[in-house]
Image (cartoon, rainbow, N blue to C red; front, top):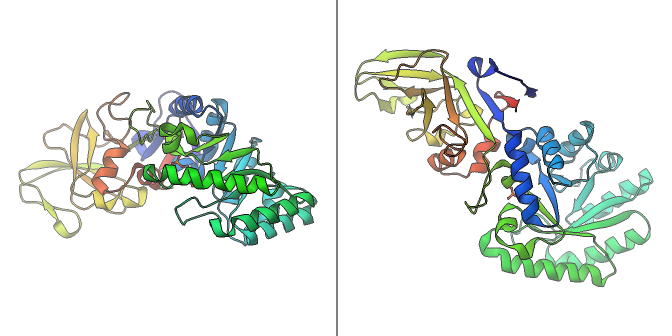
Length: 375
Ligand SMILES: *Cc1c(COP(=O)(O)O)cnc(C)c1O
């Protein structure tokens, strides 16, 4: 659920809140659109990387994106039901996917093989419409997309169905596995497009680049770039000037003064080395604080970093605030922009490092129990 709040809000003092900075999403979109040169697809899968798919989609469309991308048809329909009319691509569906519903909502569908193509074309024939499809080629990750071995047959079949009026092959897509695989992936993709054209297809958008390739490899841009991470301030290059978009806060529930040698949390994995003050925050791994960050994580309280101590629980964490005059109702900043634009709080990147993961997992992991507030 996403709430719009204006002026001072009480939400942050009564519950954990994830505040989404749509101004930062807008700024990131503008940077990425300029760098893309061609068209930009805003990837709002996984509820807009945990920020709220609809507000992020609207913001991105108002600041340079012209397409939206999601994995599932359910996510795509959610955008249509919010009144969004821009092209929406759904690229990951099982054969049992509800293609009829997708077509009714004018959702573009990625097709990773002949079985999907047949079902999508069948749904289009039944509905009396032409399905807009993007043929998806695996360019090296052995993950989603048609294998090079089945590509020619898939293109031929798509061309047949296009001539029969059941599909319109709008695009050809691929996805790169990482910086080391760009040259090979680009070559495989170029060959795949040549094959598609050789059988008579005329795809209008070729799309291969996500955030990393958009920022580092202009030769991959083609007509359309699909960007997720960059919209949310995740910058694999570290020099694109993207802004973090999420701040997670939680109110202090209680504070207690304890003696030296007091074990804290499940298993007593940590004990206070000296007499100190402990503050309790009402969020834990069910809310996206990775348990693997136990023993390393910090939060910002009263302008200072304080360590999270003991094992991170499902619903709560304990912070050793030392001699800080922390009181119940004070608000801890769990993560935020950090340096520029922040006040010294930890960033999603720091949480990722503490847990041995990537920022994407921190942002998308913020749980449903955390209220989203949009600014
Ligand atoms: C998630 C995803 C993207 C966006 O990638 P980022 O690295 O987040 O920009 C693009 N394409 C596909 C197929 C994806 O799954």
